[in-house]
Image (cartoon, rainbow, N blue to C red; front, side):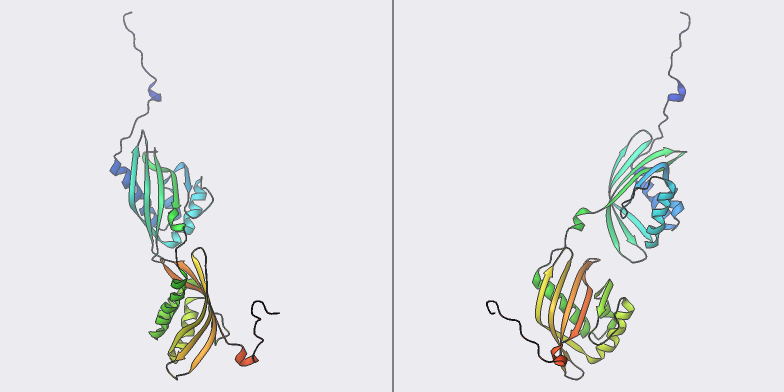
Amino acid sequence: ISHHHSSIMPEGITIVNPITEDEVKGLFSLWNDALATKDPKKVADRYSKEGVLLPTVSDVPRNDYPGIVDYFTNFLKLEPQGEILESNVIVGANWAQDAGLYEFTMGATGAKVKGRYTFVYVFEDGEWKISQHHSSVMPEETSPMKIEEEQVRNLFQLWNSALATLDPDAVAKRYSKEAVLLPTVSDVPRTNYDLIKDYFVGFLKKEPQGEILESNVTIGHNWCQDVGIYEFTMGATGDKVKGRYSFVYVHEDGEWKISHHHSSVMPEAFLGPAPKPASNGEE
């Protein structure tokens, strides 16, 4: 044997493109910068040809370019910008993984939302692209917010204190984003912030201060209800007015807000006395 050369087939060799842990963490910024453009196609361009997105707020896996574009068309309306809170990186041969916790600030609303993430990156066509992106809510934050009956009753005082400011804006802010107010002295349901504020512009001229006379509380999963009878003293005239009330509260953006408020006059004042319910044991 004068010459014997044996070697692997060169086209089968995988050329590894090196990347450091810090560089993997930095790949998130490319995706986040794409979010900042508010262009769903630019965000979708950050995903690989066979990329899979399991989004935070959609049950539908997005496993192609049009599906990914479709998801971000809606998500970008919130004007999200993300920040990595905790990162755990693994680097392989032409792939890398970054998994941890991130937080988004929604420019459209100011809300902050935490989530868990997994990004798997692959080196494709000369750059690092997202091969898999799995995003999910923080599971402990979906647990019910604890509240006791007495705390539910005390939520009335937050609303009552807002009345005391005589500022209709302060009162309207005690209501949730999709609240409904059925007022005592208006036929018009108030179904948005402006309408609720408009009602209190007139009502606050009476300088009302309320007191709960009878309360019945129910507590659910991130909601609670207080139903009963209250009485207002009108500082402008000294008049006292009783009414029936229903407050339904929801936990929204870190605090309890009024989701439903129904207030009505005491009907017997207009219709005459009604028969009293029989006590237990009476026929």
